[in-house]
Image (tube, rainbow, N blue to C red; front, side, top):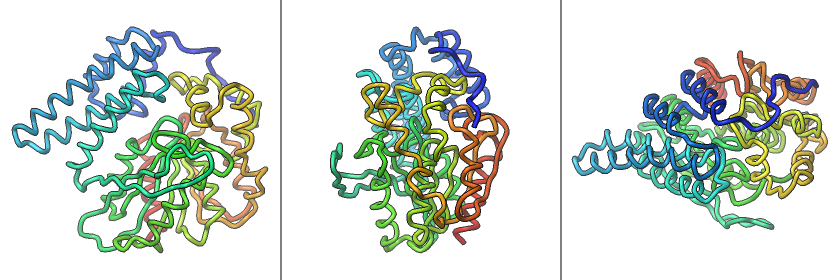
Length: 377
């Protein structure tokens, strides 16, 4: 395994961050792929700093403008315009809490994000329904698991994809993937990755305990086909999709690891080399530490180390059909982890795309949706 090249030597300057954001905005890729391009560009221009107060202030202001448009549309009985404006408001509030709400003003942006998303979800077609399940575990942060259920119209007992994001893309950011799956006749359940969003636990060696109750719920739901379940883990979330594919292959038709690590990513040398990848905007270590509940660098390194699926002895076990997707030049998760998976256990499918982390491009999501759809037939 080689260390990533092209990494930064420290945090970005404001001007460098603005240039990075404009590049991602032009390409319409995460985290600049959800919001109106002109309004986003104008907000980038107004940014006065990358600290939590200045960062949240700029994005919240734009989000508030869209909330006003949404409420005006509601007053005019224009549900379609309201839905679209609520989604834009959500997208700008998401940027205001990005990459994680580690400042009071970013926490407020996250609160506004959830509020706007709930209003958008109620008007979405098909609607996005909030569900909660009771949950209990040692050191739990809350006693419920929250997720969104979305079912295709006119499909009796559809198959279901259970999906989650990584360290900074949470259940709300699964919307576009959900829309493509629902269009293919597949129901979706979107929840937060372990240690992020409204997850009831911090990331730890047995973090899969958060997902197991949701899988069991889907297997028993009267209006879903519990015999046809797939998992999609995006970015860091691909780690848990891979682990669950090995732990419960009999319950799953397939799983997708879209850019997640299994062993090499969690080794100290990679942790050190990937602190400031040029593919990430800012605060990657802070965001990962928040996910882990790590209070210092030693806890951060140890929190990663215990996640190795190789060291847990899982990789040589049989697993559900597994698709591994990433960009060839990923500097956040080593491609060596894909090679490692290919050398152990059941055969895997692989699709590498040009570019960096997750291989964002016009063919990435369609490839995943097609592969999953074939396994759920």
